[in-house]
Length: 275
Image 1 (cartoon, rainbow, N blue to C red):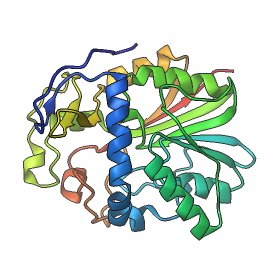
Image 2 (image 1 turned 30 degrees about the vertical axis):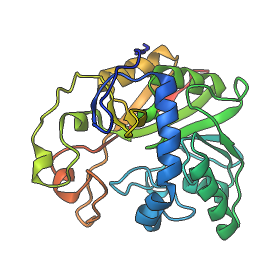
Image 3 (image 1 turned 90 degrees about the vertical axis):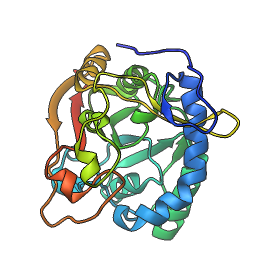
Image 4 (image 1 turned 180 degrees about the vertical axis):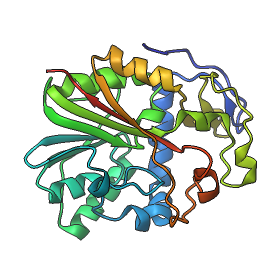
């Protein structure tokens, strides 16, 4: 299932919900993450760690969840790696990870953290909709809240992941929970009232003063995600909605203890490419 639509005009400087193509989305995401990399890591870097594997703002870590299984000697692709904290953790566990991201700014931060930790991993700058790897190159692929929400053609990204996985390989994808689309991005009481149609699949966009898209985030329903995965030839074996821990008090954007007690904030899809 592919959802691909032409760009729709937006007033300069005005946020809203408008159609945006893959090319426009990629340009906006690359620029936004290049610009935001330093501030993002200054705000969230301590929580993310330098060589740690955090799946989501709820604080679920791979060391506790074990969603990837044993990774020793496996060839692993991280899609939307950001500063590659997860890949460095996997390297310390005996895996052979490669971190891929669209943003040169985030990959620059990844190189700095690699120097600091002594855990370098190969890094590739590329679009998740067009992975620059041969068929069957990886035993395992994952994304921890990276890349997929910023892909206009996320179905193409699923096909690409399936292509570069070996038969029997695993794809684990954490994204913001689709139900969150219906609610304002507010961690407080205002974020508990649905104001947007869940079935409106137009992306949220922002534009700079010149009218160029500067931020694009795409929405798919839960059913859309399942259909994208199965259409790519992947088998969904688990869908995890992490609960908010009672002792976790950190607010991260729209994620907060108050909202987390009432609404799921993250969906994690565990898939296998049939042998």
